[in-house]
Image (cartoon, rainbow, N blue to C red; front, side):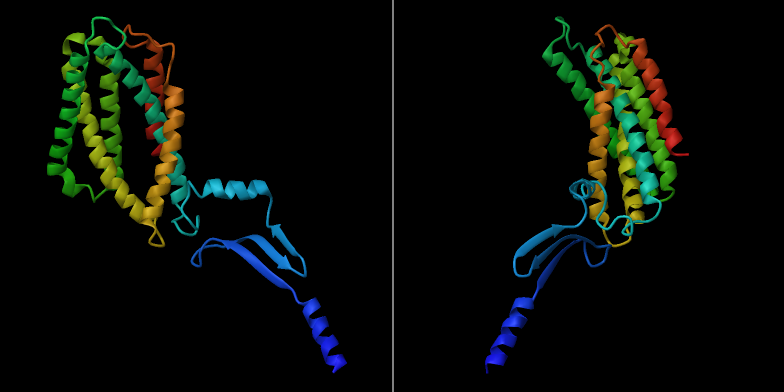
Length: 261
């Protein structure tokens, strides 16, 4: 009897409980993040360095879960070039917005709030109506040849921003110029949004279209913030469009087309 009791004590003292923590899902690549051991004291051992753990957490905000096996092989190259294109676009957006606000009269004593608001209203109204008309006549054609329509969207977007940038040089035709630019960008919004949906469906290998779209939003947000910082020129004045803005605009104008090659 005493031998049985001592044997049970030895078994209990030699028992070990191990709990492992894994990150991921059953359909994607898993990686171990921590191991909890109770023998007889509780100990926690994390897998990898703290930097790697933080880096994985940051990366989860920008790439789909299970990357790269959850998307097609062309997803990463496309997103890299698309982010560079977005960066250059937001630089030009900041420059054209500065020129547009200058043309409206921001910073001038002679400008009125009602006048600036009405001009902005006409600009936005023209763009909204243009988007509806473009959808009416070309909406059913956007499913075919998505690459061509994305190129058309970039061309129309560049044309619209160029008109905003040059609007201070034509004060007598300011309303006509900015409305035409808004009309051009409205085509961009419709064509780019429709073709992006088709591309996202192509990238999704595990029914993760929503996840890919959400992570693309995070990538675009970072590109937007960097582009806004680079395109914001505190030295700009209200005397029309500075020549330096035209140079930067022309240079960044070539980037989207290089990214599409």
